[in-house]
Image 1 (cartoon, rainbow, N blue to C red):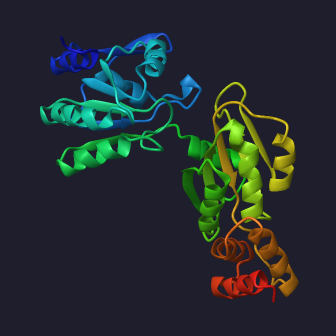
Image 2: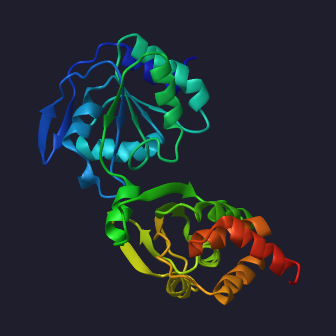
Length: 308
């Protein structure tokens, strides 16, 4: 007996009648698109952020591969879309990729979407894109909403150079180690975080990357959107008794320009870092924060650790 997934793919294998989408109360017939994998960005919260091109593509393709068919159903209902859907996520990606590739090789078109925003950001979509390109199949990007870009724009922090690192490790030890590696990057850092871990993460950032400004961007584009920019100590104070709800993007500003500091400044920063990190991690973090050569900072960290 065929599964729901097989039925969805079987429906897509037949040449469909022209489909349509509804925008502002008017139905629009979709024009067929080329055989390819169409990577389509969808709203991160406010459904009005959908683009006309995204609606046209989602209506015109033979099949839509989505992270969660239930989440996608809300988008489809809002805009009158009826294209067959199949799930494509971390747990079934390996088995679904060959089926999607087979459809595109047969001349069909497939759209890839995530639950929110631009696919391939913290999801398995890149493996599908890679597989298509390896097979010589066309990949088309349909750009649109992105939580990363929305948070950067709203944060008011320098955006001329930024580095996206997704979710930091859940445990403090691993988190500090990763932050020590990020300390050497001369750019704003873009991170994802959850409400329950926000305060602890802010404390670790303040310990490893002291003196930086940061912005907590929550529920972007939604009714309760909130962007709070402040110093790390001030953000820690704000969220110490509050567990914010919703999706969070955390922007950490680049290291401030450092004037030549005294030996006492270096020792103070190292002592604080050494209380929570290894010598290597502390040296990396402090060197990045103070703009000093790592070799010199490491030598001083060794001396402090040995009591000299």
